Image (cartoon, rainbow, N blue to C red):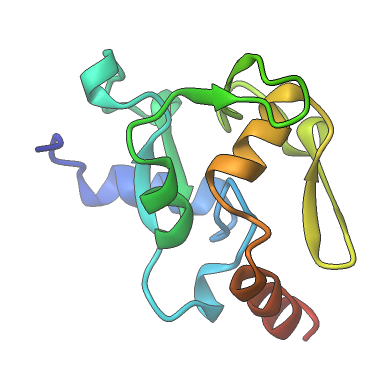
Length: 132
């Protein structure tokens, strides 16, 4: 069970993210299910319920991430932490080409793989909503 997050803190997290998922960049106004507040470092790993550890996440990214902190880089097969939206800059770790999000770094590649950014349904969703 996660800690209560106040309405004010939720609004701060949403506004800071520009109402877009901080992992895949999908805007909240084009998704069927609402975006959620995610603990970048899960509470079970000592992450606190404070602005510096909270990220705005679409339901797909949040479900795939769960409480994970990292996984194996698909390129090097070495363990890597996931991209952390409070400590890192998105464009340093990812870029988009032909509707696919690609990783530039171990953290980026690991996040792309674990959060399944490039499943066919997610690419189609990106094409449909971001082409507007």
